[in-house]
Length: 173
Image (tube, rainbow, N blue to C red):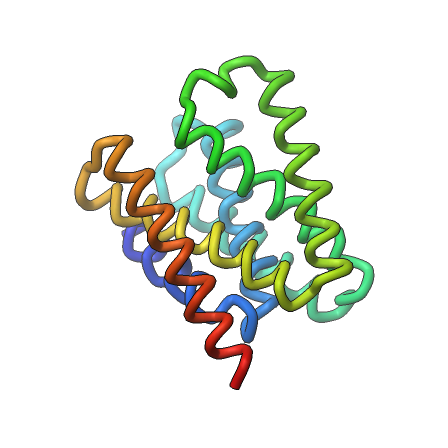
């Protein structure tokens, strides 16, 4: 069930993230909820993690809609930090084994993501939503059909490129 949710959520973000900007905040809340539930409640059933994830997703989307200007930088920081960790972690699995390195990469990615969303809102939203959406899609797909790390990385890069191109095409209309 989680894989299907990831496929639907990731696809919407991948291909329409610019038009559904609140979905980026919701997806970041959803991913954070799954991560936190797994970290702090590892022995609980999957439904507990899903409830926490959906609560954080709803909260993230609601906060972004209400406090859009104030939260753009924060959402960009979180999305950029997660995106860079996902991309580097997928390409070089031993790079992020040290906690300090993962935190440093998160901060650098976060700074870039915050800049992209704050200064270049449309382009930043397209790039970040394509990266996060592609990763969520591939995670869902990988949950149903196990993939080698190489195939996962190649498909991820292709999906990111397709998502960016489609969103740029939709944005120009």
